[in-house]
Length: 441
Image 1 (tube, helix red, strand yellow):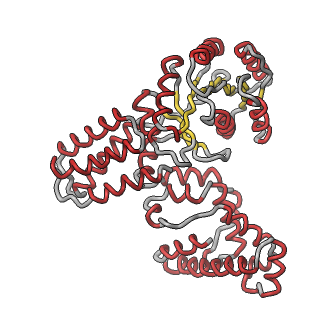
Image 2 (image 1 turned 135 degrees about the horizontal axis):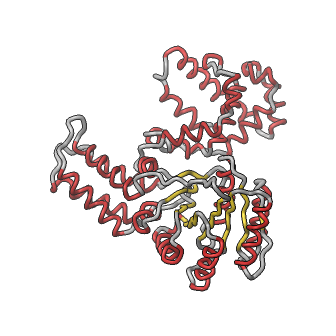
Image 3 (image 1 turned 90 degrees about the vertical axis):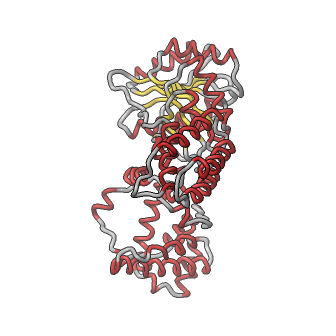
């Protein structure tokens, strides 16, 4: 996430860490560089100016703590100001319990609105709610059909009987959903290729008629300042309650995420980090600031792990490192897969970006590894040393892979086994060697 931005900021930080003292002369150049990096990331220029001015004032106005270097103190001040610009504290998406909750989703076409509706339904369902989606886009070709297909594939009910009278048909669909005892109604409104008065008037009327408890605007994180301008236009008309930023797993520069809260005054509530159903994160300003500055996000990593790990398996079986088998390896892969792409997981670990820099983690390799292990017998999984030439040929044929692939996997597995034995005997002193193993999988 925002890899290029993080890389450039940390390059400036490396220079800052070498400062012996803080004065206006020796911090002016690093701050100019930070300003340039922020502008290149498409951060709003007013936000950049405010951020840099605050960092400079506070850096020159504070006594340096004895426990840290002057450079470290500036970095801490920058982190604090960045966190404030992002919203300072988490603005929770609160689920109303006194009455059925209505959430209206707005945004331009192509921003990821419909996908977000599905993800949000999945999110609230995990919270114990009974969600339904209302299709309210009669204009885009096949929009309703797309929503119905996505809803069916994720077992999310969709009410989509719609006419050109969007307001009337939307109200009818909401009534139908409420009759079926759905308690969280998510309205997927029509998007447009650009802002126009006709579209805005229709959404404003819809808001007045259905009285939503939340209005969330979905913005494309890859469009930078265009996303901010769009949000401002919607804010003038709708006074929405929260922002969703999508596609932050791709080549997003980060300008939208770093500008949106400061420019609109509205909180960012969710960020989209991938295409999968669970790739939706509650937005925590302090964690986001930490991640984009290369400091990791262990809390989110733990939460993701808790959300995906099968606790019954963990309770029934304690992994013994000194007797690590291919079956154990396979089970661990399944847990990692549920947590998301390897690159995203490593991104949450402090300094992981540096430790694993240059390594490419291909999630498709999991499929090949699974196929190989699935083609083994129970005995072979427990005792991989018995896998001789004839067994390799059989496994190769059954998994659709080559004998060379099997040899590579076994070689890497035996290396992991040795390391895990070291873990159990000497602790985690040899953790650094794991980099080589992970890079080869």
